[in-house]
Image (cartoon, rainbow, N blue to C red; front, side):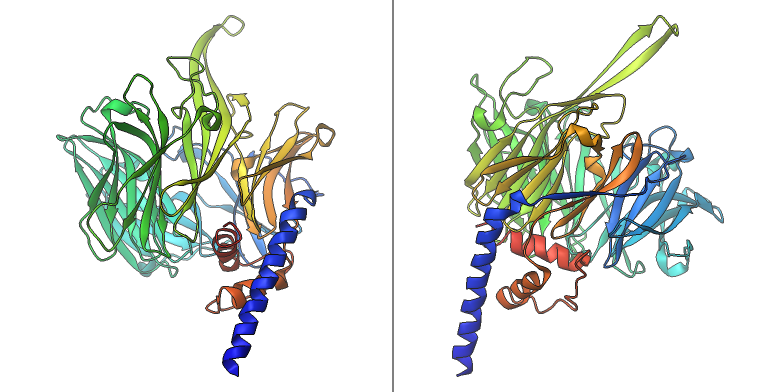
Length: 556
């Protein structure tokens, strides 16, 4: 009897899910809504801002006097200032504090977001080129707490090495990893510091690359929920080669250190007769694998191009089979090459995101990006001026099946250009809802700007709409927003020369239905709490929604 009842419950859940997906499929793109904050954000001395992260009750806005696109080791970083705001989901300020640059001889290195809280990284220099590095949280009263349990000691040659610090969190926020690069005449060293949610249990790992044999240019790194770390980039025999578009002379390589093995494994991402110069990595925590996806070009006269894809099992030492398939010119569109103009290829694209599908497939998002730099003599000021011109153009969205074959691929056509502004208003921001991927971007960063929303459904069909027209005078900062709920996206905008916040709402399944689907259909009873205010959802619930609902049967 209980068996029959259980079968009926699961069947009912499936029927309800199908109904949810059907109605979302029909109505979701027609019910987008935008709310602009009534109060402008005080940006005096803090002209740049980004949504750092969120928890159950609100979100954190990080402001700075320097562009947040500038890396730490750029000139002027030591005069950077930060201010942190905490706001509710109606975009009202609850508290704000300036972040202290130095505390008791400890210098601020960077601000990250981990385990639903802002995380500050401070360094204290010791004798013999040693540093004490602290990872601490900032509380609502503005205080931070240092202690022996949340510090680690590391040896670095100089301040510049520490200034190049970077960090990332694992998918489900179980681990956080700091990367500190170091380079000298003999070798390259990459120090990894892996901590858990307590910020008190640290594991140190190092990758050492001999300079005599080859030269490595790091591209990106990731950490798994188990504490595995991977570092990828281009490897060349010639130290002068630093351009990953130089296909013929480089190898795209990944250094992998598993939690169970301190020695790094090296996976060369290459295929005979195909030159891979652009790739990206991501840990698949559910399947205990490392996913690598990239673009290739053939060395023949026809110069065919396509995408390569592989999955490496973390509990095995043998490399996976790299699968390749061609992309036609209709998919890649026209890109601008620095030598030959208007050729059709993947050479201009950079992979900006890999999204996992629960069936061991993936969605790869790439954008055609390049930057031009040139100098000219200004007769008015009688000085030589440097000019940086940024171009963010077409986007490719490619869905890959679990066997490595192409499910579908789409080209989103756009053309964005700006000068000397660190491309604050260019590129896109994405959001995942039930059965849709949304891409939001500025069509034109002038007063005639329109904010465009393009949605791709589970079959690869494009659905676009104008979110905000020129009469709203709104320009979004797409790279500095965050999705804070299954149907909410918050990002900074400029409206009539004032910084405000915008909340984009997407028609979606109700919170009650979302919880029912997560628990009853997918059996996610391990979630400690599924309470969710309609104005915002917990980080755990949001991550599970995106990963389990969007990229499971709703997608396929």
